[in-house]
Length: 441
Image (tube, rainbow, N blue to C red; front, side):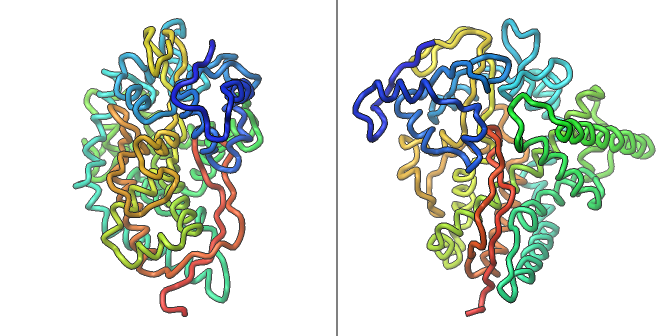
């Protein structure tokens, strides 16, 4: 399908043909393009010259198919607000296969089963089971536990940084807070958390493999996570049956005690989704926030000196890091979007980091500003699939950066950041930093 130029050409181009040539060679399924973090310059140009763009098939596109790329804030909102037209599950001609990744997920095993890959009414039924566990009021009960954990993690990091030492902010600080928290909520032994972290990291970070490649390491991680989930569910079901109900505060038990009950496939999918989502995105937001402050010490000083900026700083970290790069929908009918005709059954990928840098919505969008307000970012999505754990993630970020602001005077880079290799998640593998404690000068 042909692309169409909309708005003005990219800065620095003088001929629309330059944009046509650039688009003809653009491949957003080449994961090397994402190996140094999200390629914002690419998406800045897409918003200018082809904000709703048909990505033709390439050797890297899954299923041998092209797909639509939606990059502007307003158009992304249109997609996520209309689940009847843009399905998280499937579309015509797909036999139920589809989901939220560019790779088609199988019907009955993932689509129509895993909450983020369902449409109403199934989505509403599954989501309602645990929605009460993630309200701000419920999350507030974790405050003392979260603060004590954050204090411990930051204290250990500062100890590691004494005598000019260094710490890996991603693995030693950013990952541990959400990882231990979701283990606590789901009743998973803390001693198992690092194995679960290894499995989920392997699944989400493509490493050296392509979008469609199944390596032995990837397969082992998927099987390991599933087997662990099955065993945990079986053990917890026995506990629920013994007590006649879920123990207060036991999120997994609450899922297993649902009436009417979820299917075994839905229970397993819920375990995998909650543990993965609950540990992965927040760790990248925390580490990405620290990285932003490493590169912009003036913004860290603003926050340290004026703690009233903490709420807006957290929202700016979420906008800036945009840990989920894209989600996919499938058109259920022919529809026009951004001047383009999308056919029923076609894949539609909407890109959150691009929407969150849309210059028509965010003034000086390429600047990290801890005082930015308003900040209508889409880091948690929108509509019926708005992130279930948004309140928990915000609280984890708030507590962590509050403790860091109390105890850390500045961040010093001690080595290059190492990014994950994925166009689905903007992830960080390692972030070596020295934390300089308050009162050290």
